[in-house]
Structures are given as structure tokens and as C-alpha cells.
Image 1 (tube, one colour):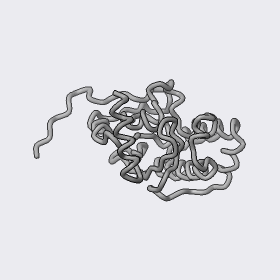
Image 2 (cartoon, helix red, strand yellow):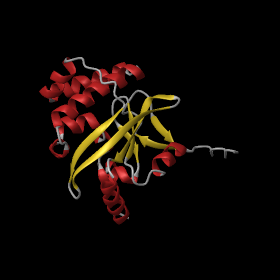
Image 3 (tube, helix red, strand yellow):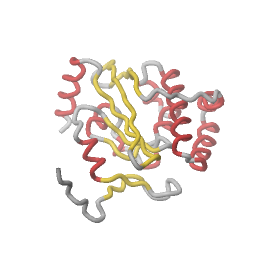
Length: 196
């Protein structure tokens, strides 16, 4: 199979330069991978858990990141400061503990020391819960699992998730969610299709 050459300038800027030491961009091909999963919410996040790309399913089922200012697309910040995100979790404390442990593992893998330290300091100052969980020094190695959410339209839903490293980008991770059963898949298809 012959691959088409990627046109010059074919990087999609999804993260404002200045948010980190290095500007972040994903390729159009990586966005196409996300978009090829029309009924599975999928996001690309950095080692600091900044969401830098997503598909339509993620916008409909999880969070419409396009409606958030670029500096507020951080999963950790949302988990510890956004009451809507907290209320959507079936078991917030365990989900938050998992997120902090996975964040620690991602930080170690990417070697993002200065950026991580700034975010940890910020979250520790603003959230005693984050500080306590961070101080536990737990590392979560599980790259897949089940997530239970309270969706505003669908009600209680169960999603399977898997995490994937992005080849050649140790600072990026792709997270894909799939409906845990056929009934939820039909609801997803209907809701995502209706969203236009």
C-alpha cells in the first residue's frame, strides 16, 4: 500500500504554544484516527493530562472540549475543581485516585519534570484532596478498565477504556472509550448521530 505524502504544514495545532515549554501539535493523520471511531469517545492527552485532541463522540459523551477555553481542558483540573465533573463520576474518590496514580505514571514515562511540578503545586494548593492523593505516591499501571458515568441525557452508563502511547511522542497518550454493552452502543449511536 502506498502512503500519500503529508502536505507541508499538515500539523493541526491543538494546544497553544506557551502552555508548556514546547508547543504541542498533532498530525492530521492522528486526528483522522480519532475521527475514524465515530461511536467511541477518544481523546489525545499530554503527560500533564491536557486534552489536545478529541473526536465528536468524546464531545457528545464526555465533554465538549471545544467549548472550554484552552487553559481549562486539563482532566486533573476538571476532576478536582469542576463540580459537574465530580458529580458525573459513579465513584469520584476511586476515579480521582486512579487519575492521580496514572498521571504520576505518565509523568515518569514522559519525563516532564518542570511542567509536572508546576501543575502538582497548583493542584496541591487548590485541592486538599489532590494533595493527599499525590502524597500517597501511588502509581497506577493499569492501561484499561471500566468507567461508570452519570450522563445528563443517557443516565448511568458504563464504558470500557484503553490507553495507548502515541508512537514517537512520549508526551502523548490516546484514551479510547467503548460502550460496555450493545444497549449502550445503540444509545451512543442515536445521541451522536442526533448531535449532527
